[in-house]
Length: 317
Image (cartoon, rainbow, N blue to C red; front, top):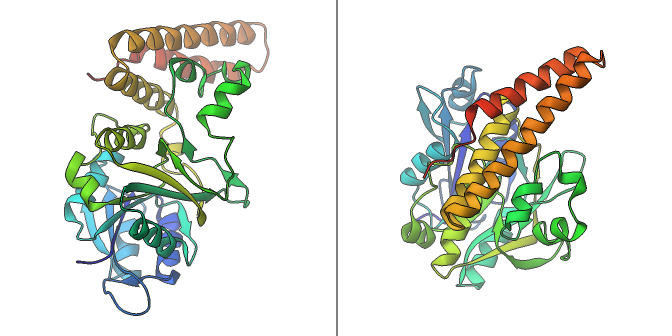
């Protein structure tokens, strides 16, 4: 069995995917073999119906990559599950296509897992394109976190909520136990996958890794953040393409998580709070537009908030 299967779901980010695959081929891993040069690995790219030449680029430039080209956009969670089903490695890495991996990052993560048998999942330290730290380690959210996170109320959130949720009380370069790590780079043992299955496909986009880590911890596995293993995440290039739908996916995924893990009444309370916020924002933007302040911008925001409200933010049971 190979040491590592690297699973990448791609949708119309050809150039980013090229950079990602190039970084993996320059890393201290041996692609599709196990020998003295480093851990043996396979790379699986699940292309989700791209129309930008991604499939042709992989076939031409990276013939060793296992390419699973889909005829349509199947979504992030389903794409990862297809890759997981095809994988052969002892360890399984879910990796975004808009990342670049430093040479020793993957061996460091594998070495850590080899030395800590109860560690089921580990995530690396992640940097932004400019080299600044990108927050990827988390504690599980409370209801207040859900109300404030990624809403217009976020600037009004008590500092303690943000500090606790994003684990700002721990060092970026530390190795520490966490509740969950973001899915831009998430390494798991195959035994975790066998225990809990793949990603929950009820999450179209966002929160699927939080749910996955929660399920792993419920089975007794530990989740860690490894500050000594470093990747760069250029950030959300696939999700940028969906415009207003990004808010709907983000908030409904958050609501699905709360319904699944916190119960029906917390889900109802959070849904009402979020809908009230979007209704307030819509009214505020409409008034500003009527007064002649940046009318095009206000009209665009009104359309976005109206689309969110029309969706009802109904999470799947």
